[in-house]
Image (tube, rainbow, N blue to C red; front, side, top):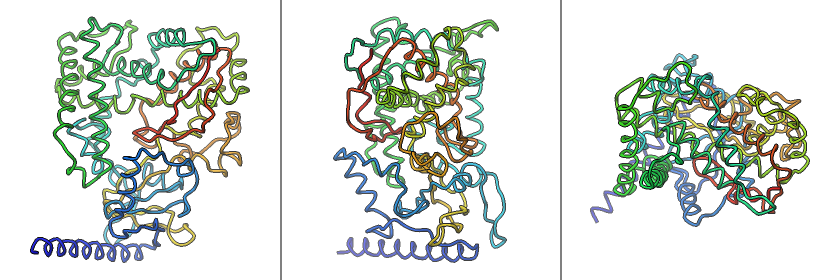
Length: 507
């Protein structure tokens, strides 16, 4: 009886505190000229547990969300709020709001009202992602402010143009990949093959690992075991982010075991790199791995390990998902494939430098159109580190500013953002690369790689590699035919991919 009374009293106290905070937020919002935002119609209007448990049930039953959940504008408006464990989670497709969280923030200062402020002082990721640190440590994904700047600076030497533009190893590996593809109209899942290829590319760039050069079968097995442990540990970290403040309640023992496997493997590579560290001569051509560049900047094994893990998390399947989606679309639009082949016909292999790949419009237009229709990331969000406002979403019209309390989150919904008819034309659901000859989306209207200071540092590397693979395929294959009549179906993990893969026949 005492236990029940204690639980009841605790629940009443929590609800009372929640109601008091809501009253204070409404009063503050009115004083700033903000108006109420529209909310998702929760069954639980205090904590929003209906959405949380509904999502968990769908995950357990492996239900795939319908397409319209992704790219249709929600019935609650362009900017609306849901409750996540009692805190507001605001979703928006308004470019002005997206700019406010990634580009030009607004800070509140007591009763004095509103003043401009540095975005990194107002919005951040650390409160949402610090639960990942037993796996990945501190790095550019989990930190804010000066800490984030420090870790970002550690990455910069690896992404300077002189390093990422050296593509000789990648080109040779890509040629082997294409040469070994099943042809003669055999059905092949390009999604799986591209995942494996770009995983090897990522390991080479980040750790200097080329699986075909691992000296023994034991070495190769160690790499495979590391990758398995990495995926399990990353999944555990993602679940802790998803559960938020409830994350610490999740079982920890098995997760920590796979985290230790990841740490042990990376630490071994770090120490090996430190012992054999030799400076590259100025004329050296081989690409310098992230691990090599980190060991020239710090001797802290744990810090280096953390940056390597962050790098793998950020890069492991982004390019492969982009190319898989591109092939999915080209296999269903033979005219686009034929046009690409005609555009590259007669161009010698030596033409395809890093700069030429980034600036070749026929390929760029195809990749941009793919990123528009099927963004690699579903949402891009940040949490308010202090009280702030976003310019749109309040009131019945949605045109008034909205008060955002400290601890609330705002996320850009990328799929409907990229299907805005006012920006991309009436045929937003159609694959039409030529539209990019006429349209010029503004900075916050098209976000395939994020925006602001935290825009993907490897953007040009990913686009150049995807472009070369596409050019190589088009130069050596006469046709790509779809062998799957199912619609593109979203599968959500860290990235969003087609749950059905990319089943094609190559000719």
